[in-house]
Amino acid sequence: MSIFALGDSLGRVVLSKVPGGRRTLQVRGIGFEDRQVAVDVVGDTLRLAAIVLRRTATARSVRIAVF
Image (cartoon, rainbow, N blue to C red):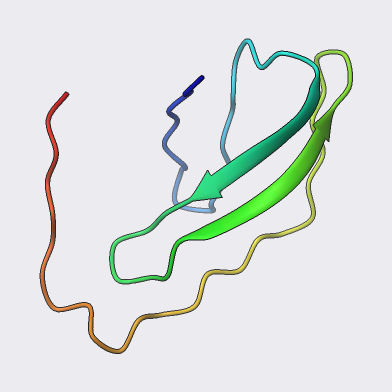
């Protein structure tokens, strides 16, 4: 299952219709290392601590994928 969402300028994101249970959240940003975080979804609320992405030293190009 895949749910896609964009963050605002403060990094806030709204994810809709996430089924309950243990899930893996994959966070990506151009010029940053990808990060995967395990989360537990209970009801309609998912609370997370801040997720910090590290800059990549070699990120010089951008990949664009169209689905």
